[in-house]
Amino acid sequence: MFSSIKTFSREHPTMILTLCYAIITAIGTGYSFFFFREFEINIIKFADLSDFLLAAVLEPLSLIIFSLIIVLSIISFMFESWLKNRFPSYRRFTENRLKAKYTDPIGYVTITVIYSVITVHTLAVKNADIIKSQGKDTFQVYFSRSYGMHNNNEFELLGSTSRFVYLFDRTNKKSLVISPENIDYMSKVVIEKVVDEEATSLKKQSPKKEAKQ
Image 1 (cartoon, rainbow, N blue to C red):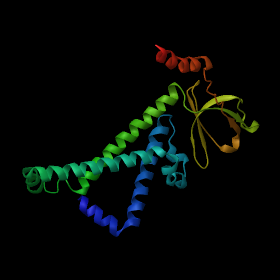
Image 2 (image 1 turned 90 degrees about the vertical axis):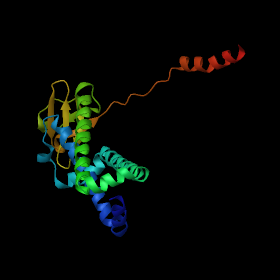
Image 3 (image 1 turned 90 degrees about the horizontal axis):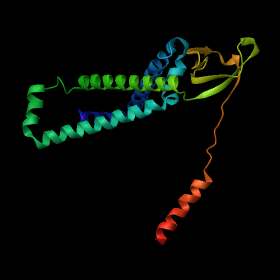
Image 4 (image 1 turned 135 degrees about the vertical axis):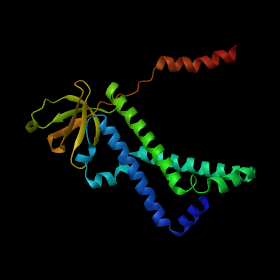
């Protein structure tokens, strides 16, 4: 099967790129669906088609998962080829007994899809739990007067689409879907890392003391 894939990629490189982008987009869309579902938001109802087409860009994690799938696929194909060359009995077993039942593209695609869904779901739930428990991307949100909500509220920024901004209030455990027109601006406190000068000087002096001893 690996040789046929290489032949197909040489003959149809554009189709391969399109297929890769479609898979990455599907992974990004699946991650967004599972992630926002943890906050009781059905992202499919609020997002446009253009938002899903940009899922590969908005969710860099999808590119990482896709790359991992490609790497694992290459390793598995190489390992199977080594087994067939090293053990002729295994080659005969796969060719005569298994035939194409477990080695054809349908079986491989099914396993890959199941693995991808489980991985994406696990990562989405894990990231959502981090936001719910300790926060991850906290902003001071200042709403417009027409919206009728108190300003200077801290919210977790879950994400945004072309029509809505998605926020989470960790204090009240509430999700907020709001139009960008109802937000004046958002501010974030950037904590500067302060270097302990005394600790740094001690570290610089300690090697000198050890050298003298």
